[in-house]
Length: 133
Image (cartoon, rainbow, N blue to C red):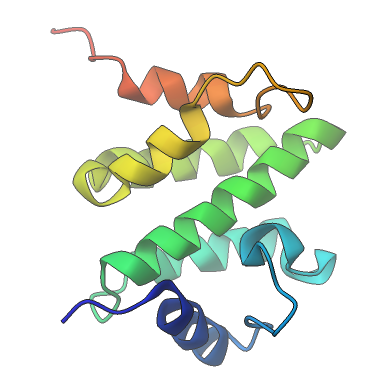
């Protein structure tokens, strides 16, 4: 059974005790308050991504949130970003089929007014074939 993004966010919000979508929410992952964007919360989101009772939609919504948080950390130069990125990269590689679309969205090259996201180049490296040993 496929669930909607709205249902996925509702499940995540209920399970983790974080704010969900409201009538005025346009981008849940970027609008989640700062208190839920800390390294401890990011680690919790990554652990939740590995749960067997979470489907593709929930995992994708959570990973989008993780990437959004890490992107913000890169922008401000947070010292925990490298450790969290290593954990995130491992999760993305381990479940590449699940996260393919999320990676593609974040890895897009943008020329607009806002430019590209700070973590876009990291995600583009995930798309590249790994060297053979």
